[in-house]
Image (cartoon, rainbow, N blue to C red):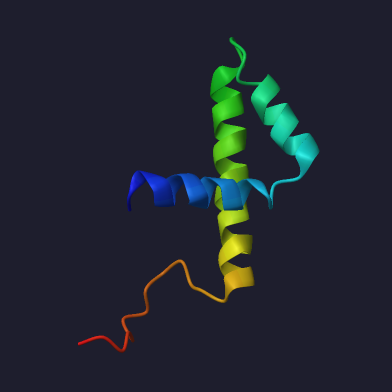
Length: 69
């Protein structure tokens, strides 16, 4: 995945994270709560990725049934 695709993926995931949880995660990045903040933001982005894939009709796991040779 190129850097541009990674940035676009993160931007798309952020749209699915509730604003208050995003603000809370950023506030928790201030030390000494930074580990908790990184865990919260990571979890929120992971869950947002699942919602994003569901909205796009894709699967996070390749089922091996691709049509390409």
